[in-house]
Length: 416
Image 1 (spheres, one colour):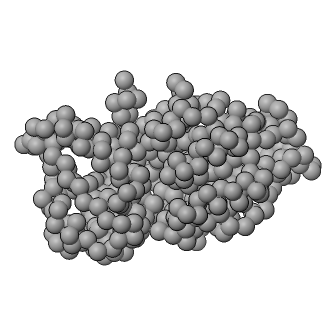
Image 2 (image 1 turned 135 degrees about the vertical axis):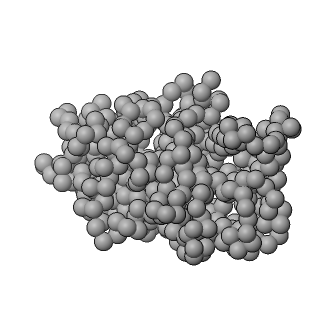
Image 3 (image 1 turned 90 degrees about the vertical axis):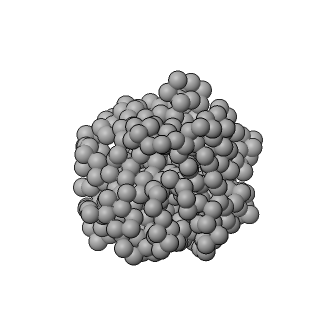
């Protein structure tokens, strides 16, 4: 099959479109004759719940990648259709959403949350229907049919604490460092990270004290929880949407003097909410986050190309899209899944691509390191984690931008 390059990224690029409602999206062909097969990728996301803004911007990035692919004529012999289902981030809707997407003939389901995956892992395996999500889980780290971009919340928690301990030591601060954890009661990322933090505190009692405060999903009143964490040196914020924004406002209004560090789930998909809630962005200066994506302020070929694409496809929304990283994450997901589809077509022929062919192509993913990233996108050592690296980033109010603070690094379990 003839391959093309999309600017300087050495990938076979193809794309699919997403609609921001639970209806079927239109498909596209290669512009060079009638397609011989229809590939269906279902998107189980949240378009009206607390993470709706993130899902909508992911959709836009993915959809814009489709426009580029159509212009470049990258799709050979197949038509891609993307039915979407709005979970509303209501977990009672996850299984019905999966069944509805399966009923649409999905060859792959893009699960917005690893919590969805944990609820659906048995169904994916029984149905031989591959899942792709952003973050893995220890429960299905080596399970067939389950694929992720990044590592699990437990590993992320280790990476957070490792950096906090190293940074505290590098600054010569007096031990112990008191770490707070603002979290959602019963939520997977909160439960798993809290367990990691408590394990570290038990292993290093002279160096670390951990305090936790939790509230239900959607909570926006934080007086009690703030009282529990106000004396912490640093607070890991593991909250979503309006909860995260109102937590930061509570801390700002009460004069919290420590630092905030957002989990990968918390800040970057909802940062505009935080800016609006706090009002004076100077009060957010120095906020930190752990992150496994690129930033608009990075000096890399990848970001230069994304900037050009954003200006081309969404000139009127570019300023809004650059306030977070959901749009580029959607674009990146399109690139990755496109590479998968293209290799599946090459391996079995356009007319034969199905869930099994896509699953095999996912397993064989090996995209060389792209400028700006820390390593190649590849599944290694029997795990379903494609990209194992993190970095700490910080918000600088003077420029109203996020910047990389550290180099890319791995949590101990991967680094060893």
